[in-house]
Amino acid sequence: PDPHEQEQGVVLEPQDLGESALALPDAAREVLRKETEHLYENVFEVVAHGINLHRTDILSDRDLMAIVEQSTKVMDINVTEKYYRGIKVLYSAIVEFATRAPTESAFSENQMKRIHAIRVACRLSAEIVKDLSGMRPNLNKYMVSDNPGMREQYNIIRYNLAKYLRTAASLKTERDIHQVRSINNELLFQLKE
Image (cartoon, rainbow, N blue to C red; front, side):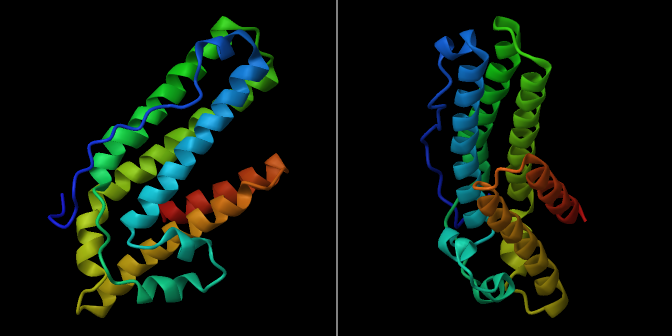
């Protein structure tokens, strides 16, 4: 880990995954939704700070590339620690609950599809943080490099992650599930390029 990062020993725990919710499909889906939002908020913070940007800047209407290019201070966050003591803990609890829920109550096929979509979204979120953990030392080094080509490439990565966060935040209010999936799939495709 980067010597500028400090370890924070707090383990992030699930807030909403109670045993009683397993009895009813709608209750199980609702607590999964709430816990997924809990995971999302934590992923948003870790990724934003992991790419050395402020959440308020990402959520603003300002030009993202300008924000990325102007943000050259390494933020004090241990992404690896946040992953293992927070994101992975929440993700694992969500997967365990989502696996148990259909077997402990009568889920319709549509409800099963929704539970599966939640699991996939949570897995992808956790993977983004884990991948960021591995690339952060180079990101921190090259975002201020004297080599303009390297600086540009790492700023493009930071820009794409910031764009993903900004769009994901805007999707929280979107009710058309097909529109959300379409936008999300496009963003994930862009991130993998």
